[in-house]
Amino acid sequence: MRVRTNSFNVIHTASVIKADIYPINHNNDFDLSAMSHRKQVQLFSTNNTIYIASAEDIILQKLRLYKLTKNQSEKQWRDILGVLKPKRNELNYITT
Image (cartoon, rainbow, N blue to C red; front, top):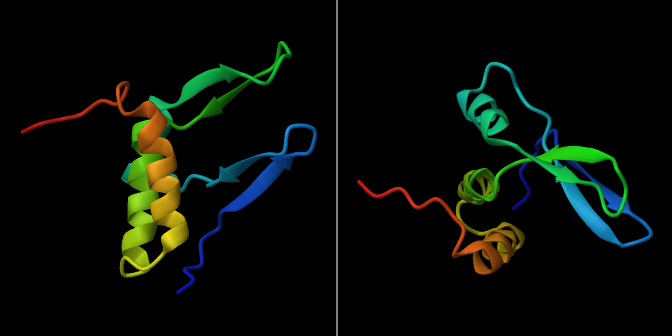
């Protein structure tokens, strides 16, 4: 099942790194919250920097998309695991 979003991706051809781009909706509390958690990172070996979403917000966004597909999108689930596995010791786990 495909869900339409206004997202797109870009690929850095030299490294073949792909980035998913999710434009923010200024009327969406999740998007605004994610922007407040963004991280500034150096772009490859240049002096240029970009902002990326935090690992926690990437996981939450992917879970939202996974839910929209009625838990049937293997791609979203793989993406979630792809963030969780390498970042598991760095994530902010909130317990209630």
